[in-house]
Structures are given as C-alpha cells and as structure tokens.
Length: 600
Image (cartoon, rainbow, N blue to C red; front, top):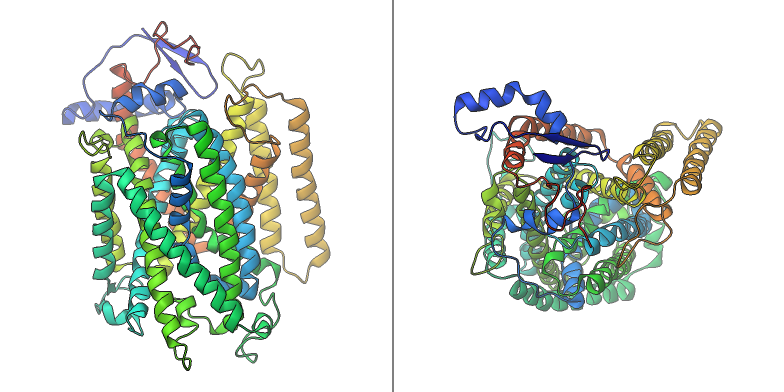
C-alpha cells in the first residue's frame, strides 16, 4: 500500500497492480496510452517532499556530487556567468532598437527585478540544497507537470542563450585579431532561410572545449572561471574608464542622424525603457545557474545567500556603468548591434587598438559565461533525469569526476548544433521569454510554499492559489493597458493603469492580513513576505508583456511540444517509477511522516 500526495495535500492510497514498464513493449505502451487521463490526474499535480529530493531522488544519480564550493566561488561563478553574456550580446540591440541612451535605466530595472527573483531562489536553495534549481522548487510546491514545463523552459533558455553567446564569441574574437566582420569567419549557404543560413564553426569549437572542461571537474572549472573572471573584470574596468574618458555627454541626448532618429534621453519614451529591460534581462540569467550549484556548496546556509545576491548586486552596478560608457562613446543610433563596445572605437584615429583590446576582453567574458551556464544547465538536466520524466541515464554522476557527464555531453551537442546555424536575434527572443517565465513561476512557488503546508493549513491551498491567480490577473491587465492603449488616449490609459495597479495592491494587502504563514524558513528567508515575491511576480509579468508577438508564438510552439512529450513519455515514465516505490513517500518510512514531510 502506498500513499501519494497531490497539489492540494490530499492523499490517495492504492494497491500496486502493474509493475511492468510502460515501455517494455508496444502492447504495454498502447495500454499505458489508454490510461493517459488517469495517469495525468494521478501524476500531474503529484508533489515530492524536500526530504525525498535530498535523499531518494538524489540517490538515483549514484555517487554524490563533491561539496567543494564556498561563497567566493559562487560570487565568481555569478560574475562569470552574468558579465559577458548579455552585456556584450544584448546591449547594442536594446540601445539602438528599444531604449536609446535610457538603456542604462533598462539595466537598472532588469537588475532590480533579478535581485527580487534572486531572493526567491536563495530561500529555496538554502532550504533544499540540490542541483535542480527551479525544477526542484516547483516540484515540491506545484507538482510534477508545472515543474517539468518550467524545467523544459529552463533547458531551452540555457541552450539558446549559450548558442547565442557562442556566436557572439566569433564576432568579438574577430575584433580582437582585426577581422572587421564576423561573416568572414562564417560560411553562408544559399537556399537556407534568413537567420539560419550562416554556418559558425568557431562557435561550435568553443562549445565543445567548454563541454570537455565541465565534464572533468566542478572545482577545477570554478578555479578556471575565477582566473578568467578576474582577467575579464580588468577588461570591464578598462572599458568603463575609456567610455567616461573618451565619451561625450552630448551623445546621451543627440542622435547621429537626427533626421531619422528621435532625440533626447528617452527616444522611445518610457515604454522603450521597459522593452529594453525585457531584452537585457538575458544578462542576468547567470545567477540562477549559481543556485544549481547548491548541492556542491560546503555551507549552503551561509554561502548561498552571499553568493547569489552579492553577484547580482555587483553585476547590476557593472552593467549600468558599462551601458553608460557605451552611450557616452556613441549616439544610440550609431551603435553597432553585433559588437557595440569594440565597434565604438573601430575606425577612429589612434584609438583602433582599443577595439582590439575590448574584443579580447569580451572573448574572455563570453568564455566564463559559457562555462558557468553550461555547468548550470547540466545540473538542471541531471535532476530532471532523476525524477524520471526524461531518460534516467541523463541523471548519472560519473564515479571518477563526480560530475553529470551524460547531461553535460548531451546538452553540449544540442547547443553546438544550434550555434552552428542559428542567427543571434532568433536566439535572443526565445531566451528572454523563457527566463521571465521561469522567474515568474519561482516567485509564485515561494509564496505558495510559505503560506500553505499540507496537514497544517486548515483552509487548504485555495486562499493562496486564489491570491496568486488574482494578483497575476491584475498584473496582466495593467501590462496590457500599458502596452496597447495609445498615448493619445492618455486619460483612459491613466485611469485603467490606476484601477489595475490599485487592485493589485489591494489584493496583496488583503492576502497579507487575512492569511498567515504556515512555514517559517529554518536558515534563511526572504524578508517582507509576501511583498518581495509579489513585486517580482508583477515585474516579471510586466516585462513579459514588453516582448514581441513572434516570441510568444515560438514560446507557445515549444510549450506545446513539451506538453506532448509529457503526455506521451514523461507521465508514463514517472508513473512506472512510482509503481516501483521510488518517488512516493510510504507511511512508516524512516524519516517520513504521514504528510510526506521529513521527521525531525
């Protein structure tokens, strides 16, 4: 007899009747498909406990990962993962097409939003120091399907981001050695659609090299990252110094082509600042990779809060200074989209060498960014493999290197294949929407976990769920009013924004005073609950509303594929594992009470 927990905390007891794998034969698989509605209802909202994630689920990888990282390693990994990816890839595009010189504020807004999300990640990572990141956090709150949908988007986010960064490496390496255009190092194939017709072998080579490094050792990878990051930060400080020294304040308000481009610090108005923030949010995805290293941290309660939050704050300061230096150097409409910083000095008398130096520094930054991101994505995939919703061989930890070699190699191949032919703009749009969606889900999960505990909360999960749905609804209405009502309808726009903003605040206040917290964090918790995660939810919804339509089409198509994969493979694989007693907490197990919670 086994006892299963679902999303609402209700338990179902049943007797095992069929322990044959759903994939053992075609007949078994067809039989499993006929049971799809039953299995979906049984597994989709099925939650695990913190104890299970940290013991039985983790044990499916074989050897434990080595606990060798400290807070300074995490800050180094955070700096390495964030600085180099977005600021060298997305800044030029955001400044020229979305925000103009106000891209400085775009980075500040995106950094503030990232810090709030970082607090949410930190509480989960300290309470549950496993390598699964958002996948594990959602699995213990909203259940298997929500976790899998989010986990799949995380993997997509990392793969597309790393492919984008690897292609930008080609551009900056070319600049470092004096090659004027990255197209000279790419092979153009006629007949392929635009955006997919340039073969980049340099990007593939760098991904292969980084994949080999992360398969070897986590600690050695951290040391390598620290060395590269120190060198890269030196280049960053050089870029900032040159920008403030050689720049002109006039460039902050005067475009190079006033007959074609709008003037002022806000050429695209305030809406453009938020559109730019959504684009540059790519720059901050490195910090969530740090949370996936929790399983390899020596003292999680102390090291994780310092490592995650500290790296986000430092990176936000650097980003704002870098964006300011770039906008001082050139008018926003003259910025090179592909290589904004090095392009600022290309062709200038006596200063062309600076472009080469910046290209070399950016190349170091992109290497560190790839290293950290690929470390993180492999650990996400490893933990998703532990749950059984994807093939479990991806969860294996190598007995010698103590790293998830299978997951690292698999994702390295997929990333290299994308970087081989996919254009930068196509990749960036998918990354931004995936990142914002995942951060939105984690903030919701934190509130749900704090205010609802199975067997303890007498009112059940519904007050918390109603709040989360209502608050998201008001945030969405605010966002749609902001985006689609024209400036000419100023009064109606202001009225609707005021109504929906006030409704969101009223909803939050009502929840705060009427529902008490059911769980107090033991080691580290987000302060000012539920305000900080609620603001994070609102900002993530707002930034999601700033993205273009094609991004949502691609996101919808990918999510539809994920749902199909879950229905035709994942739910049956996890159901089989449950039948064998691996994932379900049994009443009477040592260390587990009747609610599936770890006994003290």
